[in-house]
Length: 146
Ligand SMILES: [Zn+2]
Image 1 (cartoon, protein in one colour):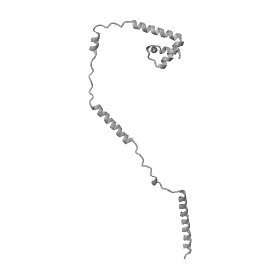
Image 2: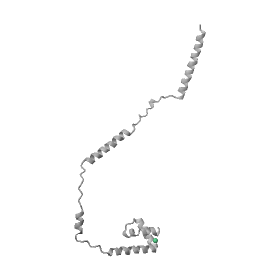
Image 3: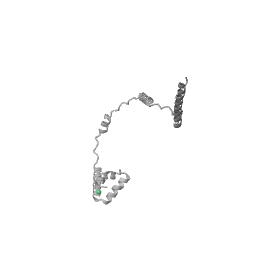
Image 4: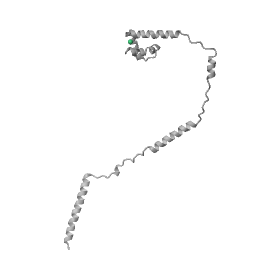
């Protein structure tokens, strides 16, 4: 990893906030890079110096003034209205779902399809032509008959 990336994580490394993998990367880099080790030393010295500064004194009346400014908020009474509102909303959405959802098509019934094979169709056509020819021949004989 680059020094810039390592230096961004030095404070977190010092505080023990890095993931094990990232902590391993930073440790490996610190073993090899003297510049980043110097940066870590500077951070450690700064942290130690900040801990040496005593906290500012608190005036004797400060806690009482803070507590006086805390105004209790009145609790809102919710009652059953939200529960009914949610139930009504659920029923509305569920009802709309029933209305909007398309109905299922009738189940497939193979009996409703007219079954006819190509052979049957050709035979029917041939029989119709033969019947037509036969009718024509009969008509010819009828005309010859006085
Ligand atoms: Zn480095």
